[in-house]
Image (tube, rainbow, N blue to C red):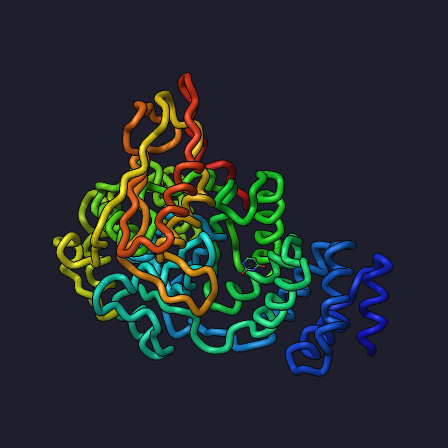
Length: 435
Ligand code: URA
């Protein structure tokens, strides 16, 4: 087999066989296929596309390029959850203990933030003492004893994806549904869960800006999961404005804790409830979504979710008193700067991407992998789309520790806010469920 022939076949709109895709992935990971041939192949895929069958095979080959985690030592149906990323998305911090409290073992591998989107690991590390990089032994034993653990990626999962993603990033081949879906699903499938919930975000702060692309990605990933023997459901949810009010690590942990206690923002609770209900269905604890939602409400309002998150935080070295005393335990920024509305009316939109970049500029996120984040800083929104606003009223409060990029961040947040004269419908949060 020659890489030249595989590139030519795809260039001419041919359909690849498993052995050809395997030859490419293995050869590229081992260093036998050079970047220039891999780049040509990616561009051929980008232009010609891949069939659903080719996409499933590509995912399988990337998944097989590295270690595959076995969770078989943990009894029960393991359900994993993945978000395609957004602004103010602290859902995993609520869902992991919530679903664990219902008796579903949660073995969650999460990432760090990059660009305008945050990462669960950074958020959790803003809790003093919390350790998010667990050994495989500690990861498995935590799930066996308390039913939940969240760790940064362990082991050598899908090295083929790491290498391919870096090449896609510099060859303008990121935005292809088959390549995105295989990249995400290869890592999820290697993570060892039995069932998968995907939260596919759509809107200004999401990877997918348009609904038609989000649904295409959701259907492709659901097909890959189901074809690989792991029942998969995707929820398409709104990311046209930040989720909840908090954007920034400690600020988001505070909002997640409030939500676990039943005191969180309405939109964020609605999303946690819907995603939690789907996870209970996937884990065979609820017979349908209606029962799943009722169970989520019961777990939150009985205090069981709060007990579980306390146990989870303590088990990973964090200070469990953060539940009772978040204000004194979580890091706080030195100063607050208020951004005010420059006219009255109704909030038409709050551009999530601009707000995410604003928070990143304050130090809450990274513009490149090596950047060090400040857990205390970020942005608290004072408004949500659809709410009335008066001229001069606060729309956002920036929590800052220095003034380095302050002007730029203020300008971004200001430009993210659009005010309409008349009443505005708030965006629909749950747009579609794809099975
Ligand atoms: N996230 C991933 O993990 N891979 C992609 O290709 C895009 C987003």
